Length: 158
Length: 173
Image 1 (cartoon, rainbow over the protein chains, first blue to last red):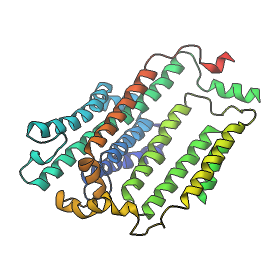
Image 2 (image 1 turned 45 degrees about the horizontal axis):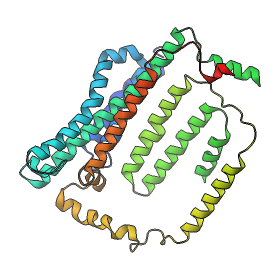
Image 3 (image 1 turned 30 degrees about the vertical axis):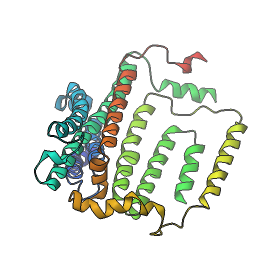
Image 4 (image 1 turned 120 degrees about the horizontal axis):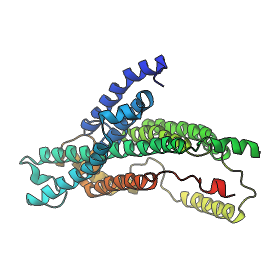
């Protein structure tokens, strides 16, 4: 799709904006609607738009596949570690009060950190799922099978 | 009204691409409805996940499977009976619901009131949803993050082996 000038121009304009909005939703989530889930999805959708325009291989040069695997796990790990940190510092699991001296600031820090963990996991997993489906189609074509062939069969049958 | 029309069309149509697009419209309409009801978090989620990402992922699946659904002969009468009975029971139960939007309803009396009163004093952030999600109900949210990761792992496990020449049921018939 690299040849379509309109798509490329619009996407070039949109991708940074969507990513920026994703980050806004991530880190402004305590004041306005939003949070880790929405932010992760927004970020991943910007990435998918990038894949549509520039191709999967270009996108994987920016964020390698191994990094996506790692990020998906690291997000959950970050969440759990914040929880364990509360225990280590003398509270309950996922108790944010021991993190800092000021109780409100401690809660806010905890919320921002765990939401960041959620955001990283969601973004990485959505990217991973899309990546796997895109790969699958490429592999199917490479294996000499036409994924669209079944459409023709169906038309003939009717 | 638009929702009902779109939902019925999604079920009736056999063109899966059309169904996907209609489903995106459905999600977007629902998101608008949530936004009208001041449920910003839910609206944002529905717009991003329902209308955006799931549509793209379904399209990615449609790139692998035939575009048209099989025509199924006949109808399942027991299924119709179960659906009708459940629907009738739900409608009957809905007569006992308290009037919509009344401040004395049970849903506003229990924990909701506590969260609305105390969140700012406890945590100091204005967005109740974020506070409940990440602090009061933090373990639930961690479970959700684990569920997402599990979904990713399952898709990886299903799709990483290379495709085989035989394409499942499509060729067996």
